[in-house]
Image 1: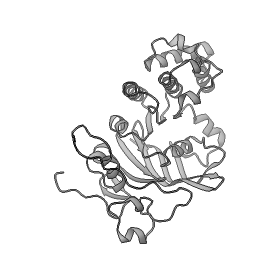
Image 2: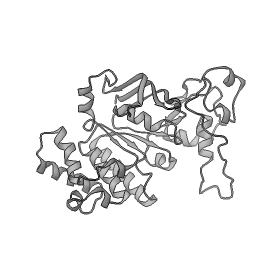
Image 3: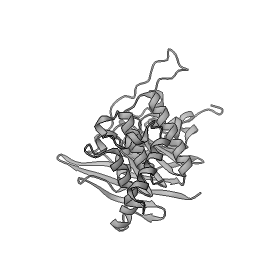
Length: 327
């Protein structure tokens, strides 16, 4: 199965009053058709900026300053605006972090959902409404007809999140970018939303680029994982190697800081220090000041690129984590 999305040396910047924020710094990866690929990292790692860049929805102060975004063989950064607009909402969709803020408070849910179908198909409003109700039903909404006549401000955070998922999936896109889709809901609802999302992806044959800071969500959803830190993609691998034998010191430190049910009495290892200022980035590895395995080479040379350490396991590190045989 070939690549649906290819990101090549992508760079995204934001102009702010005190300088330029280098939000995405030379990120490269590929995502296959129907694949669930998770981008994970701390807040401020550049994950959301990456998703907005792929969709062509960066705010006015943001810009792609280098690289390529290739979707189905076409570089979206050089494609005509009309072509990208036609893709957006139909072949690729985005679920925003804050579902309640993303919905129009003065339009009914039905009006906002049917607008997507009417824009991208030949269906009339009545037929579009039926399709939307069916999508809401697939997402576990108990009374879709009533939901269609509701306004966003009357809904809970979980209900708004389901509506946003319905809006993103109603055209059965080939790529869904889901940005922190469960960050505003409780654990029980989180599990249900993720299960519905997996079912929809499987039934619609949609690839999912899942952006999250939650390693539990990653473990539940991903086939492959990319770890971002300070705008850099520092590691990428299949799901199991990331959790069992992470090779980049940042990924290892991130996992060590998580509480575990099978490690009662073990002291959590907090990740020391703080992420670097993305306005004043140096050329050296951004994790260097916090790294437990830093070498003199790390201080003398520029940020390393991704090295393939094992089959399909890449890490941007001169001194990656190693493990005895059998561990």
